[in-house]
Amino acid sequence: MLLCKDAIEREPDNSVHYLNLGRIYLLTHKKQEAITVFREGLTHETNEQIINELNNIVPRKSPLIPFLHRDNPINKYLGIFLGKLRLR
Image (cartoon, rainbow, N blue to C red):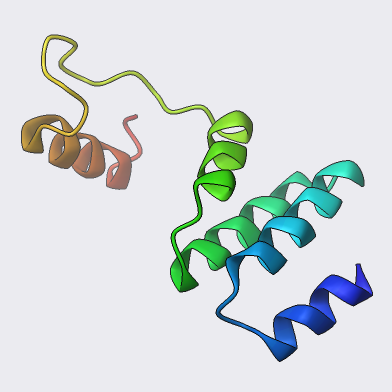
């Protein structure tokens, strides 16, 4: 774990280091820390492996309006709005 943190300090924009640290957190049953590290890695660089890890950990809820695609603005913003109100 210390090696991964050291690598992140040296190369903070390399998302592979965040991926490795997040996987170590998952192996040590620190799910919340892993999610935080994965999300931080995505702020620096898009990494499909990190996205896959997050999708495996935190499955997405079904769209509010099922006949519309989840990326539809109505579904997207309605979900955000209801999430802020803690109704979803």
